[in-house]
Length: 216
Image 1 (cartoon, rainbow, N blue to C red):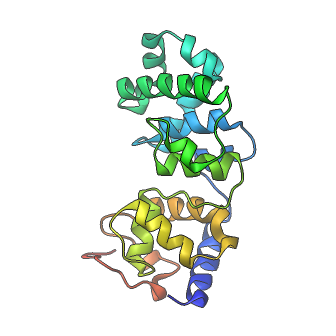
Image 2 (image 1 turned 120 degrees about the vertical axis):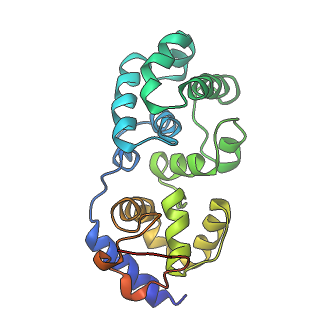
């Protein structure tokens, strides 16, 4: 994939989505690392608007590792119920909070290896914390950021972890900061998983439409 093509695609998508509308991207630079981490854990398999409401509700009661640990488990589950998978998520929030206090003196780690050493924190969550809380040059890859680069023909990967490694090789660093926000919005709005809206796509002429069976 030529850099010129990547530049043209990123310019077109940046024009289409000049501002982020995602909860986690909007937290960048405004909230501490712990809040960003917890919101990311709550966002897994959850609609963005639900994540925002539930996160705000939780932080009014508990916004530090100490407070999460002290919060009654049944109350925690009730607060985060709408995010789905609330039993598992409640246990994860408790465990992650304990690990941050016991192993990292109450500070959310600033390195990838330390973050993923905590059970419950995966590659995507780790990179979101590094990018959004610590402004590090990493690429958080979710389902949209994995699907779309494969669909348009930039890369050929099967797993998000592979996608991240390949994107680092080809994507100019000037696009790292907004890549996640742009591709998440694009993936929800136009380049949806099934029957993408190719007739409305601003980068249709560049797209190889890999594995697209039917479009609109």
